[in-house]
Amino acid sequence: MSGVTGPGTRMRHVAGTHPWIVGARPGIIRADRVGARDLAAGPLGCIISSSAEMSKIDTVIFDVGNVLLDWNPRHLYRKLFADEERMEWFLANICTPAWNLEQDRGRSFPEAVRQLILLHPEWEREIRAFDERWHEMIPGEIAGSIELLSTLKQRGIRLFALTNFSREKYEETFARFPFLREFEGVIVSGQERLLKPDAAIFRLLLERYACEASRCLFIDDSARNVEGARRIGMQALLFTGAADLERDLERLGLLPAP
Image (tube, rainbow, N blue to C red; front, side, top):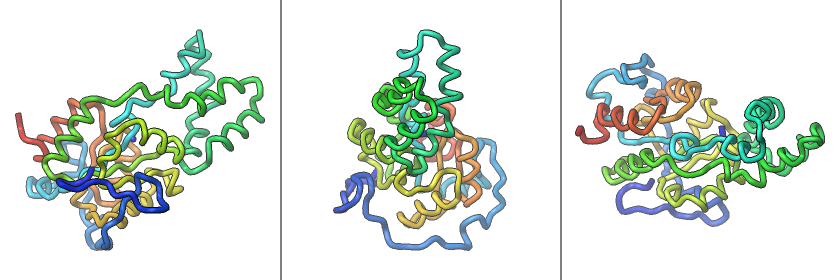
């Protein structure tokens, strides 16, 4: 990791697929609607050209890690390292973000661990922990975000997840957190072998679920991913906390004002 069905519907498991993959709606993206507008950022940090534009949003797409789930390798490695500085060195030089990103791209954890231990055999215990104790990196949900997700669902908003996430770890996380079953559809980078902020992964979601870019709001904790969504015509918000997100959703008209 680098993160709902409409009213009256539930996720449908498609035989021979992973449990989070649901039947896509038929349809295509209208090329004249994707990237056709001036993508100037509005005052909320998302693309807003007018109140009429705001009212057109009917789909919200969430990142998972650090938007809906609290993910941080330090939750685990503080148990393995007595010295904070040594832990930070390990995460910057051994189990690095770049190394982990390749699992999000589709490399299996067993292969990743095997390769890294060959390079750094003196760190075998700590490297194996990144795989074998991975779920200790996620102590739980970001509670305020889950409440917002539930409220949006109740209001009839189409809800999806688009996440840079290892295929294997997403399967395990899907079993652990019931709210992940409530999305109408999910795009997992490790399954698709595509990564945010590449435009291809955003277009895959639009095509698979017949969404219109200009009617989508994308929420992510990465500024690069937010910009990637804007480039293909989505409106987008940089997640900084559930309270700020709630205020922005109210200002966008997706939640009732207090």
